[in-house]
Length: 379
Ligand code: CAA
Image (cartoon, rainbow, N blue to C red; front, top):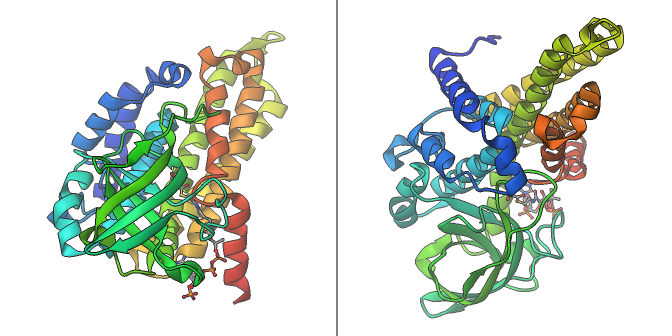
């Protein structure tokens, strides 16, 4: 067993860390308060090769392994969880899905632009009435000659506003459950496609989350991904990989909570000494460090299983559920250590607590991750 990163992985980590500290961190609080989408930062992340890290170089991707991706995700999330979710959707949901399941036409036409970050993608599965019960959707795609006509409403779509292409899941055959769901690439320029207003969220406020409306949107059959009826399995297998990315995002938030807690507790004086001299603070720091390291090991293990082409879905769920709960605990303790200063926006640490919460919800709630793990144990 070797825990040492390769030279290439160390370089990815350092590049992401330097960019994150020098360019993402300085304006992160302001972008969060004002809900400013990080346009220039995403452009720079594309130039650094962070928008299609695992995609093959044949399609302008970085050709890197999943471990490298988790290292970059962790470092980006350490300063700005909003930027990291924009990155994760494009990498592990959109580019991954297209490379694995797209036709040659789809891969040649869309993947190079997405993997290089010149264009941005979104993944649209949930609907107002179907979140965890994802196959219970109402959006339909009716075949009409060499096209499909899509009607319906999707919600909670990360990158809903700023994406150029959206992967949409819709029913092509009614009455056969998940076997009637198919996946389509929809171009934003198609008639009948409308983006709803951005949601006003608790956290990850500088990323955009919207509803999407489809009113007789005509999609050529060339834009069907995989075969008719394969959409739900495509969605779930893609989410397995996405959950590793969210685990890494949660890790970055948790690590930031620990970084901030260490520096503040060394500097803050009460009763004539730094609060870090108190055992109650030291215990909090130690517990955070133990949990973060455990979450990191679970995340690396899931990434390693995926890179080794072994079954990794249950490990991805373990990493996500644990890392997201660690992020929530660590960020809450970080606010506690900062006292009143932790409760105001200026200090920047209450943002960690708000950002951590979504990692327990999106790409499958903690309850759904436990269901996936239990099904694996009991099969
Ligand atoms: N990979 C491939 N296929 C899979 C799979 C996987 N990981 N898991 C299940 N399947 C297959 C099953 O074998 C089955 O196929 P067959 O009938 O042919 O055998 C089919 O998919 C349906 O499986 P289930 O019967 O297990 O499906 P279910 O309805 O019981 O649901 C679930 C399972 C785990 C609850 C699933 O619905 C789920 O993961 N729900 C959560 C949805 C989710 O994560 N949404 C996130 C939205 S996207 C988002 O948040 C993105 C963003 O913008 C940040």
